[in-house]
Length: 253
Ligand code: PEP
Image (tube, rainbow, N blue to C red; front, side):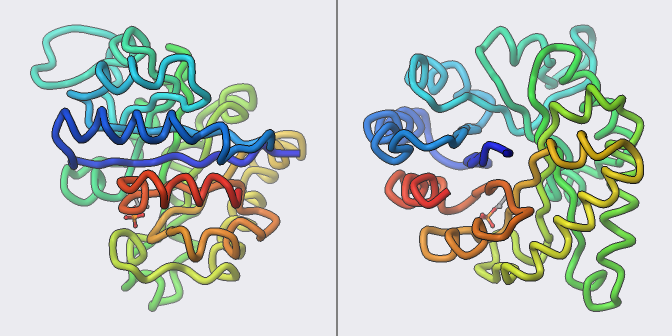
């Protein structure tokens, strides 16, 4: 039985006071939202607010996560954040290979793989994003694109390493657009990913790895998506900035 995982990606939003207020609002109501159910919850604020938000989340069931990192532990890499630093700040998760990083910062599968391995070495849970663009879906290439991203970003990991990772299927056309994948569309790709895990690894790995859906998840559509057998949680952007909406998604997980 896979534990559902709901993670908020706050992206490059909020100021310090707003980030702290959002963290406080989540902490105040998270236990009621979880309600004794088996669900894992994370929040990924902007890196400059990891420290202050981490202090507010400490002792709560909400794990702290980062939105990106560099693969080296330290050194002359101006402007970057290392996995060691993220651990030092109390991070549990790190989102890697988000489509915005692939699109705007030219991040490649090879880089995502290096980051994923480095995150694991330092005890972080990588949330590795894959997903096709609208043009790729319309050209019938969804399977090939996702398989290539899986191959390049993840398949070099050992069975022990991949078992720790969370995969986030995030169709690019659904991110921040309000156009959510249908539960059936999400389920199809999640099942595809599980088959890829089975053929590269084994049935234990394929049944253990959690695959989140991300892309315009909100308090209204989450229940239908999360009902699908291979949808093990959600990576939530816009709706994670409103405590009530995010908590509702947690409560239906
Ligand atoms: C995301 O960027 O990870 C995301 C899922 O965004 P949104 O929920 O806003 O579509």
